[in-house]
Image (cartoon, rainbow, N blue to C red; front, side, top):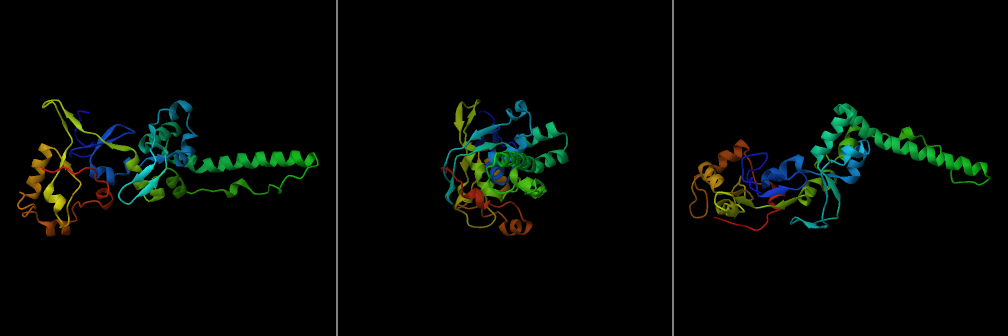
Length: 258
């Protein structure tokens, strides 16, 4: 509660990623893949290959069902796992990334082979008893092949898979910082000049404390009539500097301004 910096950058971190209790800022949360959780249905292939004791240590949480973001994504409740912890546990158990990928790819094949064997055994027993039981189980389990890309999608490593860029918002909450020195709660503030600005690039959703806001004014210049008149927007645009992330800008909570 007293740490106030984002775990990935020096910005003020007003949000808490619940799976690992990690502070993050709006920008890193919206753009860093490490905050994309793995769904249970995608992670079960890897979790099933781990010892129970190791699998039990992977941070997870049951998300709340509801409508997320201004784009109104209606998301159901899901068991979500921290991807980095899941991957690290897999590497620890399997010894290498190649072995880990092989385990993920082969898991559906192993499951299919077991189901195929059970079906064939039941079919044989029914046949010996004079009872016809469905079709002859001739499908070869080896036909159920999965590629590296399939394995990546199973673990949500592809940002476009299954709205995974949205599910990160199911594992984060706004978390004010308690300033021990001033004995007060700091929620952070938005820059009104950036909030009202229409020029590109801007970072409307970036939140500041007193220290980082001073750095912001140093970088973007003073505020006059609600804007940063000295900020070289054209040069910044040509240089491809950071811009307000479209996904992130949809997830603004209550606006606060200086």
